[in-house]
Length: 232
Image 1 (tube, rainbow, N blue to C red):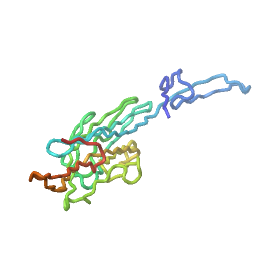
Image 2 (cartoon, rainbow, N blue to C red):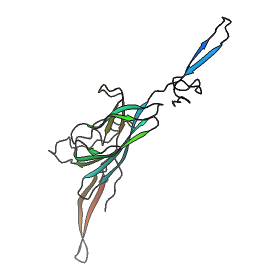
Image 3 (cartoon, helix red, strand yellow):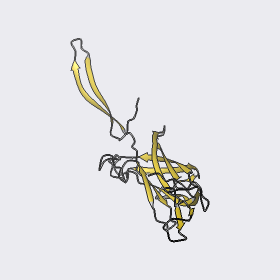
Image 4 (spheres, rainbow, N blue to C red):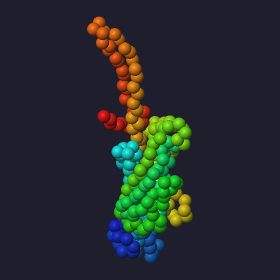
């Protein structure tokens, strides 16, 4: 699963079998089945691939979350190619995207609804990677009437270890390397956020012999999200 480039690209000698598009021609001049002349040529192909990584989900002081991803487009082949790449967030339906930006190889704003095209017909040389850093600011609202189903679904709700769209912070990158507008390769990443809950219960009042009362309460702090969190 590793592409080996031509040692010498083109018509010059120096490349060998197992490299790129190596091809050899042989001529037998006198019909004795012994090669009298040989010549070879070697060309290369691009192989542009995409990967995506969930980096972090950080709760901000105003209660929103900063969600970060990284998309890497890499040309693993031996010649230059072109690509188009777009990003599509498919979060749990109780999560609202407030804003988004991307930086790195290119920069701009991310759509808060639907997909964002990060690059179109972008040239990429052999052995080169283009990195796009994505940041979304989102709000989670589980209150009745807030718009979703009011139940946070973690990344692995359906099949453990296999993220599904509309769960957690599911996100998809799609790569078009043929220029036909259709994705040829895709990469997905999914992260979760903590949901810290607080419940306080009255337990009892017990009279004491001296006329005072012992009053007992129970405080329960829970996390119904999909990631570890902190609280004070």
